[in-house]
Length: 78
Image 1 (tube, one colour):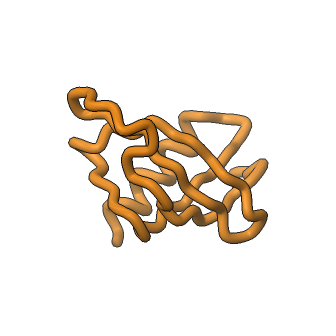
Image 2 (cartoon, rainbow, N blue to C red; image 1 turned 90 degrees about the vertical axis):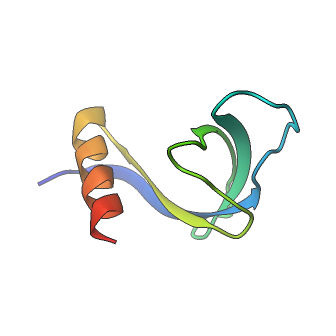
């Protein structure tokens, strides 16, 4: 089993918050559904395109490798 420190769905509020142009990367602003946290996150939008209103699951764990495996499985399954 994997112990998650935190998990929450986030909704993208601004897909390019700093309005700067970088190859493949945008800084998004997203708000969590459970806690109302506002997060600024740099995302490789070439691999993970995001637009306003998109939702994603952010999971924090004591092991980054385990989290990445779970996120990849979740992304591939639907």
